[in-house]
Image (cartoon, rainbow, N blue to C red; front, top):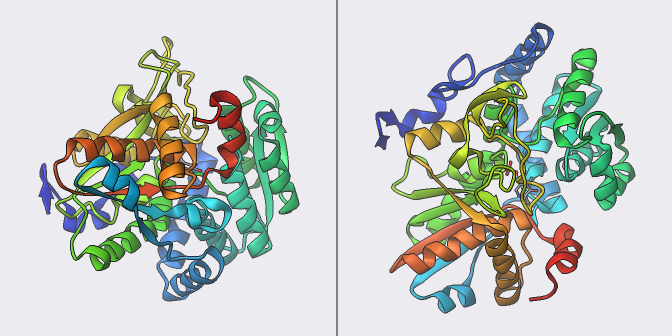
Length: 405
Ligand SMILES: *Cc1c(COP(=O)(O)O)cnc(C)c1O
C-alpha cells in the first residue's frame, strides 16, 4: 500500500534509515562514549537478533514463559449495547506480569545474554517497566539495577517490593523533582560508566537509535498475532485499530501488523484534566519538535524550551514526548492521533469491568474509551483495541480517588 508517497509494503526495511531516523525524527543525540555503546548494540541487534537461533529461543520463551499467543476477545455485551459495530480486544493484559512490556524486556534480556553482558540497567517511573525488566533479569540470571525517583519509590511501594523480591537492586534518585526524568538521567549516567559489562534497556520506543527500532520489532509480535487471529475469527481485517500512546510501544506493536492494510489506525494520548499545558501529556497533538533523552521527536515544552511538566491519571502515559516513529506517522497522516481525558477513561474502566469481566489498566482504558466513541460514530464495521495491560495495579487508586461507579 502507498500512502502519501511512502510504500508500506517495504516500510520496515526502510524505516528507520541507517542513522536511525524516521524522516527527521529519531537519531542518536548522546555523548560520544555512549555513541559507541549504541553502535555496539545496533551491530549486535542486526547480527544476533536476526539469527535463527535467537528467534527460535525468543519464540520458545514467548510460548512457554510469557503465555503467548495472547487471545483476541470479542466484546459481545459491550458491542450490543452500542449498536451495530463489533468491538474486539487484543489481550496483552494476559501476558505474564500483566502487560505488554514483557514483550520487549524478554527480547532485550535475551540480547544481553547473547552479548555476554552481566547486568541490565534501566529507569522506571510507576514501576511497571522495572518489574518487567526485573522479571527478565531473574529469568536470564542477570544483575539488574533499576533507577527510580525517591518520590516514585514512596508512591509505588508494591512495585518496589516486586522488583526487590525478583532480585533487582532499586537505586533511589534524589536530585531535582526525583521522578521519572531524573531517573532516566541517572540511569544514562550509570550506563556511561558501566557499558562494558552492562546494557541499558529502555521502557518504550524511545531513546537513541537503535532502541525505538528494537523495541518496536520486539513488540511487533502483538500486531503479527492480532492480524492473523482477527482474520481467522472474522474472515476479514478490522476497520479500525486503536491503542493508547505513552512512549508508544504497545501502539507500535499492534500498529505494525496493520500499517500496510486498508485499516484506519488511531493512537490515543492522555488529555488528563484538559488542554492547558501541565494538565495533559498529549505530545503528538500539542507538542513541537524537540530533543530529549537522546532522540528528536514531538515534545511538550515549557517557556524555556525544556520538557514541560505533564499530567495524566495513567502514570504509564505521562511522558512529555513520544517515540520518533509516532511523530513520523503523525506528520505523514498514516496514523490519526487523538485524545481521551481522565473522566472518559475512568468511565471506560468501569464499563469494561462491568460489561465484560475485564479490569483494564488505566492506560489501556484510554484506548477502550476511544473504541467506544468510534463505535458510536461508525454505522457498522469492527474495531480492534489493544488492551495493553490489566488493572490490578490501579484498583486501590481508582476506588480511593473516584469511588465505585
Ligand atoms: C507502560 C504502559 C503503557 C504505556 O507505554 P507505551 O510504551 O506507550 O505502550 C501502556 N499500558 C500499560 C498497561 C503500561 O504498563
